[in-house]
Length: 83
Image (cartoon, rainbow, N blue to C red; front, side):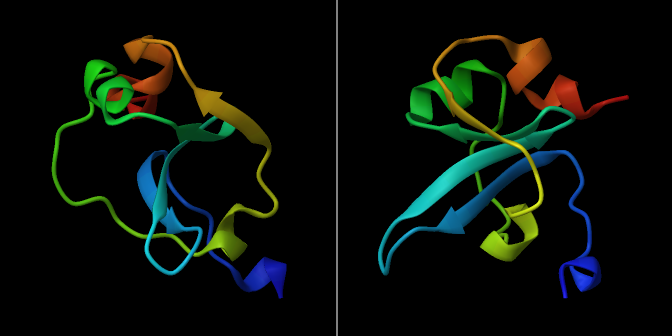
């Protein structure tokens, strides 16, 4: 079944973690990173607005890298997805 789940492109996504809350995460060549604060998302260069939802099943086979706590746009911003 895992082979049937499409690979996700680099970018910013949201995934639910309970009935009312979501994680905002970034996928890049290193794996899955979770943002812990909106200010970190913005200061890394991501524009405000709608974030596409992703099913947690699509994340299972990707390395889980942990929270993004630093400001490093080349690594954690939109430019990381431009190659």
